Length: 204
Ligand code: AP5
Ligand code: MG
Image (cartoon, protein in one colour):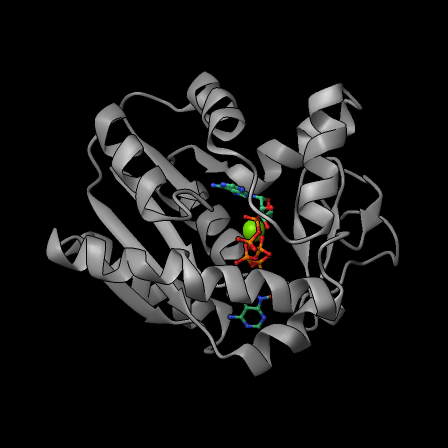
């Protein structure tokens, strides 16, 4: 299947996409992770991306597409964080078809709370949070990588990201509803209960 995860920042897209990827054995492509890997390379492009991410702004389409096209599988994928606006969705449609769009819905209040608690592994990207603490304080359970707070999780930057979501990404709801491939799930329930709803939808 070719699946897209939509949702506000910190709604739980990455958490659910990663679980689903293991469950249905489908590659998970997170555009945020792709960009953060580029930042780690400390290339010229990486430095520009770092500044934009820390400011909560979107990366220009030309750069985003160049990175995505290199790693988007042909047959099946779970795409998390892409598209971010109608233009990206239209360009993606030129590349491939999409079977299902899963929108993880969450309130701003919950999102701002989650931002304070999230830490993730700078090596494998594994996500921890309020209810998901690592066994060791600063080390990833999976790969022993260093756990970090993302540069874009300050409350000022999260508010900026929410503003961009509302102005641009939210329009994708109507875009995909029209195509009859849209499914929304309440992201404030527990992680396992959100996962069950998603799996039930996929099985149906
Ligand atoms: P990206 O990394 O994609 O960030 P995002 O979309 O803002 O989403 P997040 O990764 O912050 O949150 P998430 O929904 O994955 O939540 P998570 O599962 O971690 O993009 C970062 C930046 O890169 C963008 O701002 C932009 O600059 C750039 N970018 C990316 N894609 C781009 C594109 N296509 N075009 C241009 N620029 C692009 O969960 C959050 C926390 O909540 C965790 O701590 C988790 O443990 C916890 N949690 C999750 N689910 C639950 C639950 N059900 N109950 C309780 N806690 C939960
Ligand atoms: Mg994510």
